[in-house]
Length: 245
Image 1 (cartoon, rainbow, N blue to C red):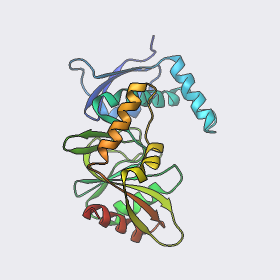
Image 2 (cartoon, helix red, strand yellow):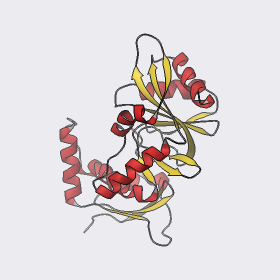
Image 3 (tube, helix red, strand yellow):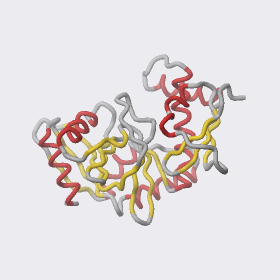
Image 4 (tube, rainbow, N blue to C red):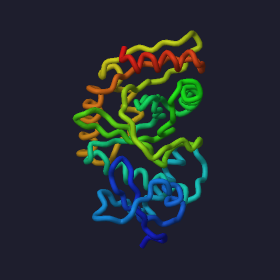
């Protein structure tokens, strides 16, 4: 039995019914709540075992003691992300910025400086807004790849309940010797991209995620972005991504 009332949210074009044990998940997802209409695409029912799994993951990453209600928000994301590949959608760690209606993603391990570059980008490149600051969903279709905001958006809280066509992904590396934006093939980019992609439990979902990554690369340019934390660096990235060079 769940302890709190179920709610329904819309994310990445899908209706997900969440059946929580605590109340924090609903508050987190408040900007994504949708009416109950028809059958949900995804059901995320949280159990004590799900909370224990998140507790173990947090301990493995040295995050210390996290309240169960906060752990549940991660469990909800895990359940939804695990179901998304069947809808040609997957979760990737990074910041998505919309500039003039086109999406640009900066991805790298936590602590590399994604947020610093994103602030510089939105502060100085006109018509720019952060769609999601940490865990966007990417949906791959015949017309390209679309990036969606989600409530799981990092400590800054950067998220908008919207989507944007994804034009480029920048794999960020710190630099102390200038800036460089270099176009990569899918094979060259694959190890870094895979490390930042949510890996579902099921074998079918894993195979589907690999297929989606490869399909994404046919419409999204991927770059190595060696960068100092400067405006010059983000301008260089934007210009390369916008021009597709």
